[in-house]
Image 1 (cartoon, rainbow, N blue to C red):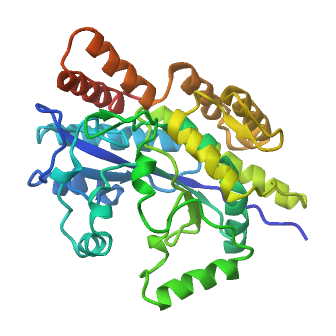
Image 2 (cartoon, rainbow, N blue to C red):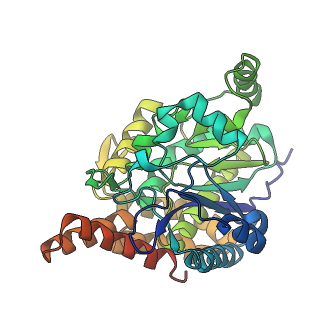
Length: 378
């Protein structure tokens, strides 16, 4: 019996930080009327986040990379125009170069009050932004199976996205400090391997029945079956400062999902490795980005990231052609050539220091770079 092919439609959610145009610091207090103006213009594509200095946008369901690009360009552009009218700007970076989490205030609303009460200081440190990619996989059983296999590739995607090298004015030495903050959450990190959909549902039902969580939206794993949509949701990546970088990663994840489905269709599957091994690659991507390679578990050695990327591009070649996104996935090579947002932030900061700028002014220049890149056309 033939296995029905999922729709593999996709959508992208991006979270941004809001900064004051003059001070370049985070906007700790909501600008009166700004969110209402955003909703009036962007409708359900925009929403507040846990902290008042954050805002989220989401594309509708997309069938092509061109469609997704148009939506992201429109959302970033219009949000930038609205924010400018209130003296601020969005930045697509997973942490702010010098913003202090102690100065941030939660957004008003029952859900956010509940999160604050439940997680306490862990929630108040969540001054981070990410990019989530949903891929339409209608069969719930298949979502679980493909999630188990896709875990292997999460460090590869994270390495291409890094945009959080600073925290509280300090250069952290990590390319994605965001994950260090996210990992403080309960139910974060890599999901465990579930043998079946029933296994997953049993776990969720125990947690909800015991009153530990209200629903599966409180499972903050790096990848999860969405509790709201018939999708597999990838959540490990930083938000990319350049929109085209995020589109490339979304295209890669979509193609990887279809590649894994093709294996299932042909009675094959990707090898499942232990969480311990995958977590080592996750750490390497968090610490070094793609600069020092990842471990090829089959070879048992660290391999240059560029080599691993070429292997992935060969694996998904058929799928990229199927979706018409060969250009988008090939853009990953450009990310390697020019660096991620984290690379460019660190370079701008060091250049400013070498030019004699103070530490504070050097970090403000990093914010200026982030504003410019966030609002540049994809």
